[in-house]
Image 1 (cartoon, rainbow, N blue to C red):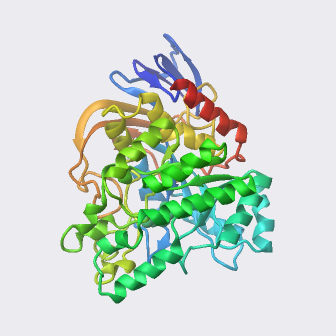
Image 2: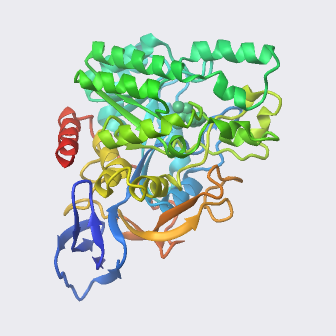
Image 3: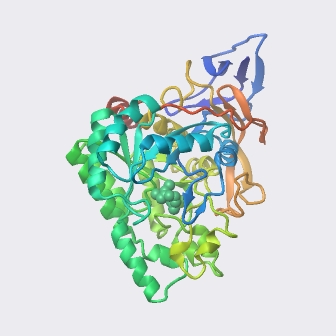
Length: 474
Ligand code: URP
Ligand code: ZN
Ligand code: ZN
């Protein structure tokens, strides 16, 4: 099976140029001028950018949370992701206290097997760091290809771990080549503020944001960064939303610590006022950390541009408004936390970022694909277009204008948090390992075709190189 992509503009994290791409079976075979092969199918990419498939480092498919289960599973979520230009996603595998890491992974493999239409990998939650877990962790890295470990500093009595667990995970990760991820909010103080709000009869969705102020995200981010420095380890802060957290990451990085950060499209385009929509509609915008004051958006864009934040994750965690978000009517603390963004991550970043002059085309590719591949041990198999890389390629029309809506999206959820938003640019055709998943905007792939990816160990060198490359481009 051979394909040649012609007439497009190739865009990677470092280069923009015109050339043909020859694909043979699942790999990019060659890039050059006037490639011809009578056995190859020619794909005309006129007017399109030819980009590496997006890598979404943050999804929650088929995940039990908030008294219910996310509405997208590995099938519906991965098909929606593909429509949006994503060809790889990394999902969070939840663990249970008293149970082995391997039993959790077995559960997540069962959820995803024969379902995903694109490739995927797992991060693994660490909720306790007892002797058994610390013993199992290196084996999980070596044998299961899971090299990133998530510690929740919030969601008290549900997912939250203590600082000892975080510190021991950091030390073990350093010794064995893992990358520790944190949900950085101070869960104990949030718990106190939530109970107080409910006692005072403040039950509407806006109180979700008011009981989780940015100071608590900044405090937890700084604490995690300092513990990382003490452990001489590496940290990735998920869903960064505000000035307070960006400042902590920037301070750690300026001292040379291996601290990385992700933000999400929702924090770049929405703000706290959405939680005040009338008639419980604010519940559609309840996720954690919460939406912030609009002034934070420019701070996040600047951090993406300057390289203080390296990736864009969707934090896709979809719950229907009817029957799921409604669980929190009369008590904001019972609204399942999460929003649907896996399909729009790529387009929002392009439309709001590149088209509005906030980031360059190459920075866009870095943020939406390459940096995640480097941080999570998938590069250069994923995250670039180069001979030998997987042929995960998006033909992206940068000029088409469209309106995001629940009526046209492919996510299995009954609302869009971006309803009515005008964006420029859309993935037209998406290849996963050389095969069409999306052809002329239609899904032509199949559930189960996506492969589980084993991630390589965290590589200081690669991460440092990525930073150096970013600096050179600037
Ligand atoms: O509200 C959110 N973000 N839900 C998903 C779980 C998490 O905290 O990432
Ligand atoms: Zn989180
Ligand atoms: Zn999340």
